[in-house]
Length: 130
Image (cartoon, rainbow, N blue to C red):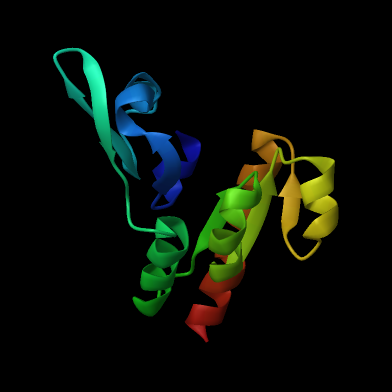
């Protein structure tokens, strides 16, 4: 994808890897941290969840490594991650969530998402060059 060509991307999701694997294949197998279903003899017998609040914790750790983090989410379960990131983006979110979280940039198209990501990276590169 265009974003992965120019930026490091990690997908943090509350989905199950087993169910979303066809989508990950279409995305050329990005790095994904999500939950897993435990399947035995064709039946779901349990699940292996990521750590509690894994999205926020991952961003927190990336920040400690001095990375400039951008988090992109669309719903309430993403807000902790967006708050932890250096720059949070609501992407194709509901009007209610946008109204309740005005501190985050929000957009509804891939082109505007890509544009703001590139803009933030250019700003950070200028700061780092000082």
